[in-house]
Image 1 (cartoon, rainbow over the protein chains, first blue to last red):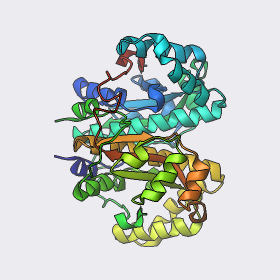
Image 2 (image 1 turned 30 degrees about the horizontal axis):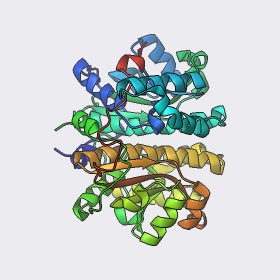
Image 3 (image 1 turned 180 degrees about the vertical axis):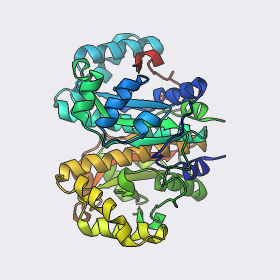
Amino acid sequence: MNIIEDLNWRYATKRYINKEVPAAQIDTLLESIRLSATSLGLQPFEIYDIRSSELRVKMREAAYNQPQLTEASHVFVFAVWTEVTEAMVDSYLQFVAEVRNREISQLDGFRKSILGFLGGKSAEEIIKWSSNQAYIALGKAMVSAAQMRIDSTPMEGFNRQVMDELLGLRDKKLHASVILTVGYRDTENDPIANAQKVRKPIHQIHRII
Amino acid sequence: MNIIEDLNWRYATKRYINKEVPAAQIDTLLESIRLSATSLGLQPFEIYDIRSSELRVKMREAAYNQPQLTEASHVFVFAVWTEVTEAMVDSYLQFVAEVRNREISQLDGFRKSILGFLGGKSAEEIIKWSSNQAYIALGKAMVSAAQMRIDSTPMEGFNRQVMDELLGLRDKKLHASVILTVGYRDTENDPIANAQKVRKPIHQIHRII
């Protein structure tokens, strides 16, 4: 098994069967997200793991009635930071110092870089930056799922304002950026399950300079 | 070998040794990017593979003198779409119809969805959308590289305007979104090579509702 087989196996699943992904595999999936690279190491997102059926029904209404939100085994919302305060940066640096056994003063330069990079950014710019980091983790999570032969669907088609309200994200300075549903494909009812994958040939997207 | 080992092995490499990644492995890396999922299947980016040393020196100047740009075996720039015209959508639908052996008229609903979603967007919004897709592919490429024990560095710290100019992207309605360098870590000269990985414990970023 290698990543090319895994990626050819996976597709954007539209319909799921009613079968739960084992907890140990969900742990692996979450670990793939946790280990993902993020800008400056800040990990500027939280993963909301939606187990409430009532909430899932409401989320589906806020997402053009897409069935994955109620059918999938698990629904993960990448809730990204909308602000980065100095206190958050300092708490992060404290953690770095502990893990790497350094004096906090040794991280002064790093602190300046972080604040220099993020300091002047608007909420919208912070969301763009934190979303980018969530999307890297999303890509890794999709590979992780495919490697375990778990189907997944990245979902961008939903009303972000309503989703933020449903999950109570605004007060926590978070924003629903993108959703990943995981589970097992319903080959009988998913019209895309057996469709040929559509991808441009590599020479159309690869330019050597 | 599994993805958790791969992700624990990798780190954001700062210094590379002078050793080339074999072409066959670069092909696998590019194939991982090509197979990545994108919104509506549009694959709204191109991969600029920078082989010119002169260009790499200039790119490094536009990127706070980060050594990866001249030291790494390969430098890939994710150049994302800045606009989506009806002609581009129609050419894509033609391709989908061919691959899936459908009549183009069967894709009328899909065409309407795409134009409805992308039609009113500003250049800035298109870039945000296309960048998100590039970041999913970036995440997959990083896993792909790690699986082959190739080091990689995702790079956001560069002057995008200068980079666009250096690569002549503006005329092609493209924009330098993010860079991935790949190669082999220089364990002697990279101060981060043996540092402990810093990641929050999962309970700090995982919320069950």
